[in-house]
Length: 143
Image (cartoon, rainbow, N blue to C red; front, side):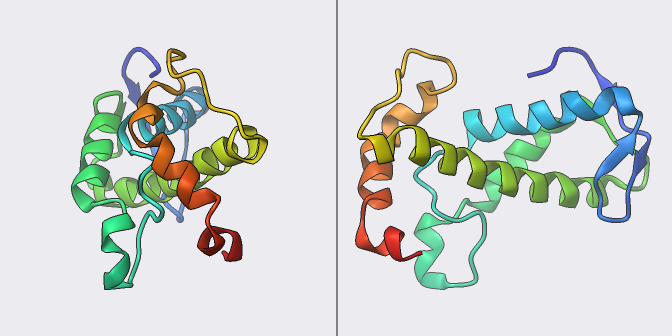
């Protein structure tokens, strides 16, 4: 996580922070760290309208905790917190998908296992076998 406290002063219409420029890189890094550290890879979907998939969908409480963690490092424009939250969760969704895609490409497809002692992969250990089983399943290959 980036250290310090950053103040986002402006959001674009799509809720993406656009000012100050000095906060944009730390914001992106923080999103990535939060997703890797706090959203288990056991989840297959960020959101789902299919009630049969709820077991595999990131729960709202995890998303809310991720948002709260982001707010410990970033202050958002007054009166625009809900817009900022919406934008942050969209970015987290993209980061989560990319994280799992990277794990699949770097490890699963090559028959490798990450070094779980490495801080980047420590949180994957608990769900790694299930992640690999799903990613190598016919269902995942079809998708």
